Length: 367
Image (cartoon, rainbow, N blue to C red):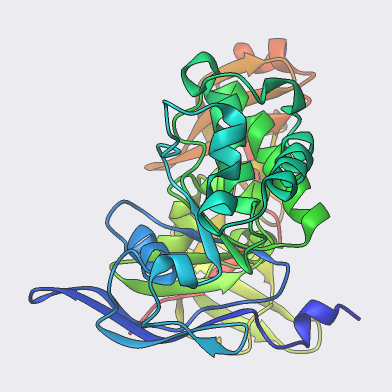
């Protein structure tokens, strides 16, 4: 059994509110982070994710609620006494100091003996694979190297929680991928409780144990990347995490024995596996159809369950993947076709067959 699931959380936020004047930017949220877990706050700009991170770190005053770290209420403590460390978006390194001096800065402020500082700095630089860069000045480093220095400095005093504020946003796309993997590897090795903030949903999916999806100062859903992607709680989350085709429908019948439902849409009837317990006959639903879950073929005209005939509008072949646009009636569907061996045939096709899987997620519409 996963001990993380049963032990007391390392970080507990209780009914957190934050006002700027009359503007409430955090509206009563209560997320928890387990010991050794990497949780990412994700959402569009202005949703409150960075404000929440700054509240945890003590860089912004809380309006109401409690922040509890390892059993201790830390609301009133200044940042340096909170046992949290933050990596800012711009790294906030000292340009007039060497790499080693930057990494050892917190230790020096805490009056560690010089020999202990030197030993700890060597250990940290080794950890982030910069052991040969100790004497180098910060402005002589690449963006990725500076990011590692900021990471090492944040870890120097072994904080109980590491806070990462969009730490990869200043890097180019390829380096972001590399650093994302390195951060995850290091976090797992050190088993350090980490809160990561990003607006990039794909980055969040790749790096996290769990996601906290935010919108307008509220938490919309908390779950593993798979849960958020496969079983989004609402239309906003479904559309925010990856591309999605929505299809309007209504529950025509439910078979409890086989756990299937028939969804009636303007494009036809679909048999769907029933996951939810709250669906009833007559309920309006949105079918959440991911581009990679749809099958495409050239066998048009045969009447089969969950199969529609459409008009192929675009077919962009890119080796292992073809991105397609198909019109089904007045509905435009985006379809990702993997391992597309029939690329040549599809290029010249007009009519195609679109097969909707039985495993699509259904969102119940509010009445």
